[in-house]
Length: 394
Image (cartoon, rainbow, N blue to C red; front, side):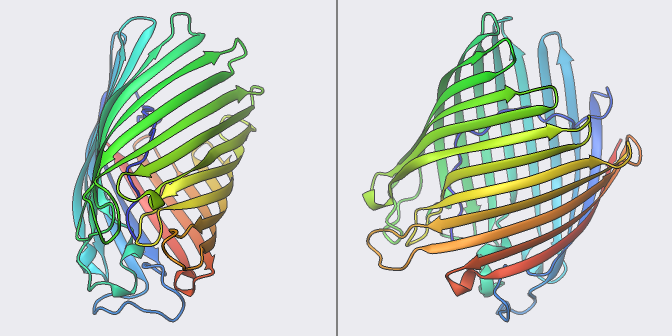
């Protein structure tokens, strides 16, 4: 397996709801204890080969950091930093520390021209599934993703919009030598939008990403590649309690070295949200997408996913969320190989309960169940996960 290529068109939306009061500076500490019954996503009866690793494991993750949220006139600044410490009860070879940050400057250059500047870094452990039954005979695999860029929105009368932007992205990994373990890319975005008096917003966006990666004759990937996507979307507030969003686009990826790795196709989504009150809602979503999945025999995955989720406020301080996702995935085989196409059917269910005990203390419990059926026996598995979480804001 290998990590996905750098993603395209990631939104530069400010994280709403971080701050629960008007304090511009907050110090945050949280910890999560998690139990996973099948950490490496192995088939029944298969256990990790290396000493010290078991099928199940308990993980303790702690964050300590600061969040700053400040307005200066027409400008808005948002910054967050966290140091992450993760420890495994059995597979201690995966213990790691990381430093993550995100900074936004939402600038109003003129009343008609706004810009969103972003700088972000996230580091962590690659999914334990990448180790498989070899754990821990393979070395620790960590990733770091970085992004920095700016997106413009020019709208003289808040009706017609002209969008533009540039983002530099990078993705580096240690401890593995997959097809795309070290990448950098420059992404350009351009588009137009129109907002009707009813609040409906229609957008046409074009994304073009040019990236570089270490060339590999083993994986038959070139040093340079291109990804592009044209996307038409609509956000329609049907009523005060119902919203519909939909998109339809065409995405393509091209590798300079091996044309057999090139692919293209339609992508899109549709989502309907029904609000019952300020804190309770029901959401139904369908997505069809193409994900980069570079191995020796595959270049991408074709995914169809349906998600049904519901949020309920049992009391003003106690909320619950139930989510069910079912998806079908195909991994087309490169023309130079004769293996049959791998097909997976996944089912994921989760129940999330959150208690906002006070403005500064939040408690959370999460239960998850995942199942995967595949025409390849090595990928058939299931797992149960349970976690408890506590957050303190100072």
